[in-house]
Image (cartoon, rainbow, N blue to C red):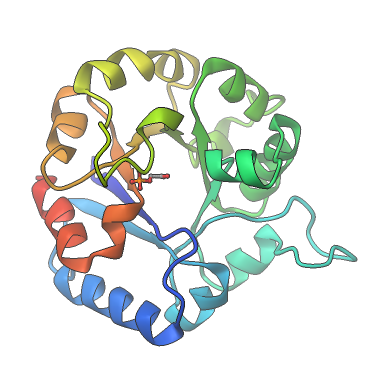
Length: 225
Ligand code: PGA
């Protein structure tokens, strides 16, 4: 099965020109890649201009009086396929709760999007998936990202998770959701990516910092062979 390589640009870059440049150079550097599915999740303001296939968040309602929110239907209608939900930065800085994230996962699946649910422990997984165990067909669209908070954004000097950390840490996800694809996120780069895919048997990776450097991101994709 092809591997899923997800770029999470977070709150970067600060201009549309910068976003276009990054997007175009990744697109041209990966046009011949066949064994991986590449998902780019830019900030929402750039999504429709770039025609990107991923978003970093969405709301749980279809529409209505919810200032500032973007519905899963809007993303779907723009041609977007994937949406990251429950990222630890949103839990920490925006106060997102398991209950909110659970509503978002359900809404995204109902709209035909593929949610990438980020979790660091079994409680977040259980609560995030509450009530959707029987959505047999739709749950195949689910991706779960194992993201231990201590391994995120350490590209500038910290230590990313070891293969053993990921093997042991993601075991609870494999047990709970056999149907879903499971990916790893946290300081992934072109040197450590293959360990996570080949040795820790992940179905892909979620890349933050390193996805902002098109050369490094292309190297990551090329390394997944
Ligand atoms: P990082 O981010 O690669 O910069 O650690 C990963 C993430 O937060 O998803």
